[in-house]
Amino acid sequence: MSVIDVKDMHCEKCVERITGLLTEEGLGFEVDLKERTVTVDGDSKEVNTAIEALEDLGFSPKLRF
Image (tube, rainbow, N blue to C red; front, side, top):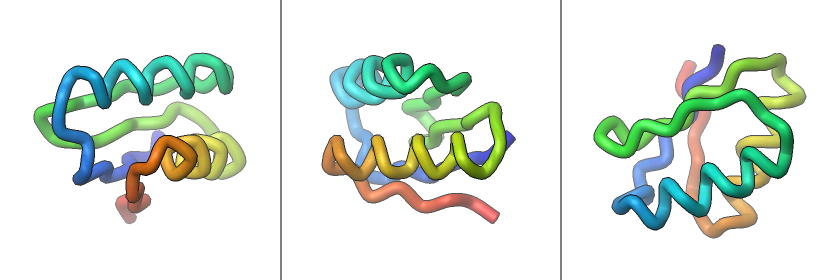
């Protein structure tokens, strides 16, 4: 699992947008609004797909190391 910080995720609408797009991408993930994170179940390719999708939505994701 990899955790992506999405500090500019502020509301339930953000969660809905993220959930919709990552579901379309076929990724296993969990969105945590309180912590402002997206946890991706998968390999580095899937994590990169999630990061690119978040960027496409206008967010500034940062992979947590």
